[in-house]
Length: 148
Length: 148
DNA sequence: ATGTCTGCAAAAACTTTGCATTATG
DNA sequence: CATAATGCAAAGTTTTTGCAGACAT
Image 1 (cartoon, rainbow over the protein chains, first blue to last red):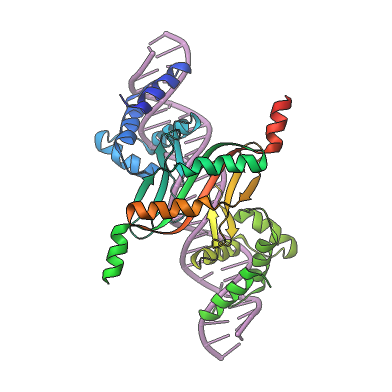
Image 2 (cartoon, rainbow over the protein chains, first blue to last red; image 1 turned 90 degrees about the horizontal axis):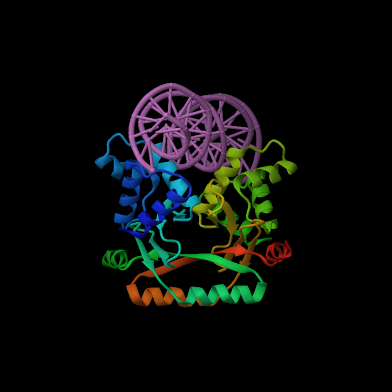
């Protein structure tokens, strides 16, 4: 079973919560995706398996997961309204957004660790988490642009 | 005169726009601030000089500035609703948010350049801009926490 | 003067909440 | 069976828009 499901189950146990079908479906959908869905995306996807599911339930589940620190969200510049949800804030990875096709690529970099410690050293702050977003053109779109 | 005002004036000239008192006031307020205000913040601040100013005008000006690429916005994790606006996407600087007192600190790092070029080298993408957000406790809050 | 911009009010977009009902543990 | 969670509808919060009048150029 996936990390997220296990962690959610644990959290529920701890606080006397219940693993409902809706929650399980939302969690499974979230785990299976490699995109970063919005609440609406998730609603539309889960609705295919359970047409009776409600948007409120999706929002409530996402909020709970955020509060439990089991997921994160990002508000990409280009997308004024929607928040995009994403698993595993603990496994450090960062995001590149292609401003032409809106594809999100993930990447990793050991340099971010160094940025954190450098900031800590300079300011005396304690850095608990970090996010990096890059924006630009992906290889594909760059090629298409060149061909024109 | 500040960069932003000059750039805005230029953009207006280019597109037959007009430098109204409201726009000038909003721009000046934005320039004078070292915080990263929300639309509402900006509305309240500008209202002190011109009580007749309207929230719509603030939003319209901010949207125009975003579209002209003269400002950026960030949606900090902790603040679900508000977007925070910020000058000069070109002068690279990044943000630390203290999750206790909500202070925003800016910092600079040459390492971000290296993250960009490394990503470009690995993927063939072209990175046009980047953002880094750090979250944690500032020195002050860290101290207060320790004293308890 | 001409056409852009504003204020106002209404609507749109996104998210949360109250309550009766369902269903998990 | 106790009570947490859901669906539904209504409300809340932030942002955008239509329109008539105001104001830069």
